[in-house]
Image (cartoon, rainbow, N blue to C red):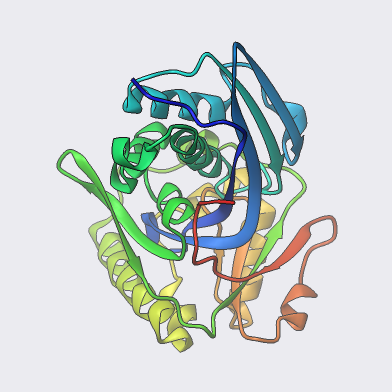
Length: 298
């Protein structure tokens, strides 16, 4: 029987950008934009408080994504608490391609483990990551949210895998967040079921080059972020996003659609002033670094 800890447990989880151009459903990067959450066990009931990004559009009951992830993790560890209080302070924009759902899932499983005495013995990091990826359905955002940094992830047989790689310290990131979001399901619905072999081969080569560029040769980022599989295909759902990506790339800036969009991520140098000035009117720019810590109890 699990024993629950007294008092609240707090967790901080980073935003993530997945795909990064050619790394469709396999490459992800944690970014220095964090949601902060707190949970504690109550004698009974469920209390959910949400403030910040997306607060007006999320439920306050058992269907809340963080609560669902917590319930799944408690099941993994063998017992549900009698009651729960959850408080979310959201910074990561919702439905913008910055991993808000993965951050919620990762926060939930980490909070649940933190609320159980000896939780590390009942649910290892590998087990929690597997659970989080199962809940999300793909690992490319979950992996960097959980582990931090730059992560190559996927599925082999019946298990998820995640391999961290280094990040060249010269790499910085600027994201341009539009005022309106696009649901991931809508963006995925625009992708074709079959792609030409030549496009798949070209994409594989650029994905391999992207790993080399991020880990130590950022001078190759422009070529390495060229994509054939998903960005142009999603243009009907986010025309201004693709317009900005093309304009930046035409000027030599390695720019991509962040995740399923519509946010644009651009890799920059140490001085990002000129890049920040390219932000379209009405959009919100963020100058970010790579977050190497991932989810952490605070």
